[in-house]
Length: 358
Ligand SMILES: Cc1ncc(COP(=O)(O)O)c(C=O)c1O
Image 1 (cartoon, rainbow, N blue to C red):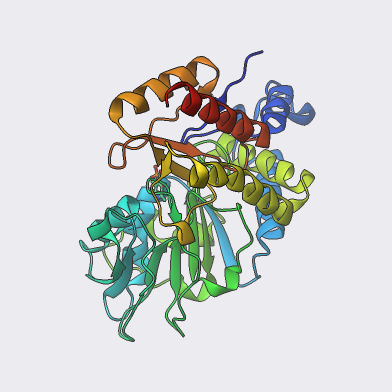
Image 2 (cartoon, rainbow, N blue to C red; image 1 turned 90 degrees about the vertical axis):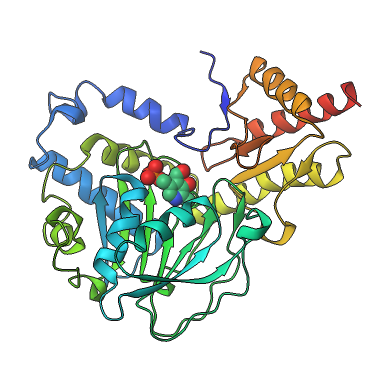
């Protein structure tokens, strides 16, 4: 079996152990006589799957009891609308950190429902750093941040002090990659397809007191209250994706939990960053102090070399390294499931490429 090292920004690599477990349980899940894909979401056996998934997530992220965990659909992009529709409750005004393209999409969507104040921005520098001068007024309903910028390879390193104003974080590309104090946030959300499982389920972790203030015209399916009251079973949830999240969380636990995962992620990122910092040919594109542990964009001196590198890497099983068109060059997404061997193989090839093309 030739599995490649897949550096895709998402959907991306899943732990092999989780895939193998899914294969083993595919046709007859734990003697139920059916696949998880075939069972009623109201069945006892699926009820156990979703509650185990929630408990594992609570355990791994140390989620306090006054937070609800919701399993939704529509991707992180649907949250861009749900957040203003539900959380612009008093001032109809929210502060957003403009730290990248996904942040920009969140801002555009929120502006359809209320006033958006840009609390800080790195747009003028093509989002090459995480804005560190975040300022907000008291008359906003929340502050929205993107904790990791998937395209630009930057992350927030210090949460601003906001007092009673809740911080809402898009953690799509770095959830479960390192320890976070959930109690510092009003809400955390993430599309699953990077660190949690396959596409199809979106995780929302929301403080209970923020639920129930949606705008009058909010569609039922877009109210947090709907899903919270129905324990994510108002309608058919993405059952199989939820099951896969469970397997990924079991894998995280088997590796020693989030602390161990964080240690591995730091080790993996260091290997690549150390090489980039010492290379004469490859250059990282993000400001050093806010570089991401998950997404590492880098460039060669010209497009011809970039294309050559991507092609030759692909040929030896290092795939999906092409950078996002806005940054160009390459991007190595090294989420939780990317083994350290994958990063070492990539850096080995980069060294070789540099020698051969000097
Ligand atoms: C930080 C971030 N936010 C939002 C999204 C959009 O997620 P979805 O495709 O689940 O809507 C992405 C996708 O890559 C992302 O990286």
